[in-house]
Amino acid sequence: MSSTAFTFPGQGSQAVGMGKDLADAFPEARAVFEEVDSALNENFTAIMFEGPEDVLRLTENAQPALMAVSMAVVRVLEAKGVKLADHAAFVAGHSLGEYSALCAAGTFSIGDAARLLRTRGQAMQKAVPVGHGAMAALLGLDLDTARAVAEEAAQGDVCQVANDNAPGQVVVSGTTAAIERALELAKAKGAKRALLLPVSAPFHCALMQPAAEAMQVALADVAMHNPVVPVISNVLAAPITDAIEIRQRLVEQVTGVVRWTESVTWLANEGGVTKLVEAGAGKVLTGLAKRIAPELAAQAINTPADIDAFVASLNA
Image (cartoon, rainbow, N blue to C red; front, side, top):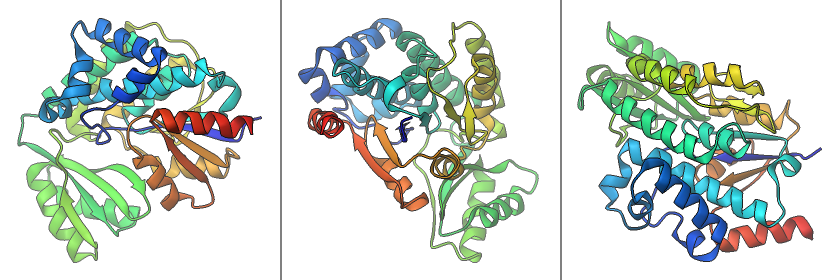
């Protein structure tokens, strides 16, 4: 049994030019990008490869773009004989990355994943008027303290822990007024830093309920298969394998906490995983893994050279 888990990055890892070197080097990557273009009915890869950055950063674009790069890496690996079912014990993704993980594990087609993420991005953006919601990173506070800060800051507004990314790195989400109160409270409670995040909407909190309802409708219409390897659910921080349950957990995920610290801890302890491979843009999750479970070997693969080195290491 493999002791490797593949992880898939979330929003914030996007950058103009993402995936272009893969498209230039591998026909399998080009095929993924063509499939996404076709599913979204636009020349979407032009936004990924050329920008402009403010257009790529829009939630409705960043989400399918990150999935596309992750799936390009997966398809190139498969073409080189590295199949997920044989080489991964588990897959996990951060927020939208859970869709990439599910796509990699065969639950969704690439086209359906792209359309779902476009819908998800639009629904999340529409759920709250611009300026009415915010997110903030509270650095240097443990999860319980961050939760207490959020509860105290709420004062009748919404203010909740949205992402438990790593020890000492918790993100809160809610109404702008409540998040501004949380920044002050966090500093008073000893946070090293508390800063607003450059996001366009307050993700993973109760304000996203309209988006959760939109995803329930969208997911009901999509063909879903049981994944070929178990997927660690963001809201459970535990593995799931049943397509019907996956559909429900993805709806819950829109308003629920991304339990990333617990997910990686579960992989290292209960899951028996010794190696994490981050497939897709950037290396954010690889950095978080080193803080959550330093004993895990963690690496990011997103360039042709990374892919070649990874395949060579398996054959060594």
